[in-house]
Image (cartoon, rainbow, N blue to C red; front, side, top):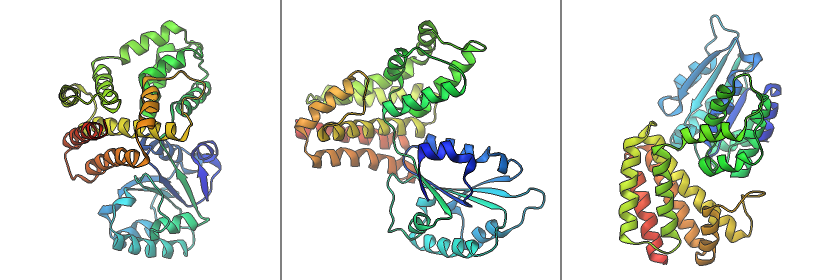
Length: 349
C-alpha cells in the first residue's frame, strides 16, 4: 500500500500493516515518520530496536524477527540503510522476510528505511515491498519552499501558535526548503513565546537574527558564488571563493562534517531542481516572491539543455553517494562537487 507522505503523517495512528517501507531523499521527514511510529499508543509498550541492515545476515535477521520478547508486548525493529546491502544479500533477506510473513503474527513491527532518491521496482526486495498489501510504502521527496512553509504552518497551528503571514517570507529567505532548519526554528519559537499565542514581527526578527550568524553568512557566500558561476561568470576568483568559504564553513559549523557537506550538496540538488522546473515552465515558489535562485534558474534554463541539467544533477547525487558510502571524506566530496560545478559552468559559459 503506497501512501503520500502527507497522508501517512495524517493517518499514522490508524495504520495497521506489520511492515513500513520509508524511502526517498528527505532524511529529516523520514526521521519524523519513524518517531511518529515509535510514539503510537499501540506501540507504547513495545521494545524499540534500531539495526543497520548491512551488518546483518539471514540468520541474525531471522533471529531478530522470531525471537519472542520476554517482557514487552511486542517489538518495533528499524532496519536502516536497506539500500546499502548487496544484491545477493537482498535476495536472502527477501526469502527470510517472506518466510516470516507466512508465520502467525509474532508481535513485531518492521520499519525498513532506504536512502535511495528513487524507487526501483526491479530490485527484488523493493519490488516485494511495493507489491505487498501488508507493507505501507511512503516516499519522502525533497520539498519545495511552498510545501515546507505549508507544513510548518500546520505544525504551528497544532502547537496553537500563530505567525503573521508576511513573516513566512522572511523565514523562507533564511531557511529555503530546509525542513530540518525550519523545524528547529518552530521549536525555538514555541519556547520563545511561552504562554503567548501570537508571534509579532519583532519576535520573528529576534529569532532570525540569532539564526543568521557566521554559519549562515558563509552558506550565503557559497550560494552566491555558485549562482554567479552558473549565471555565466565562472572566474578563477569565484572558484577560490568557493573553496575558501567551504573551508570556513567546515571550521565554523556546529554540525558534523558529514551533515554540513551534505547540506552543500543538497543546495546543488535544489538549484538543479529549480532549473528543471524553469525549463518545464513551472515554479516551486507559488504565491511567493521570486528569489535570486529562481531568477538565475530561469536564466540557466534558457542556456542549458536537458543533458546539462542531468550533468548538474549527477554532480550533486554523485557527491552525496561518495559521502554516504565512505568513498571520500565528506569535506573532500563537497569540495570536489563545488569544483565540478565551477568546471561545468566554465564549459557552458
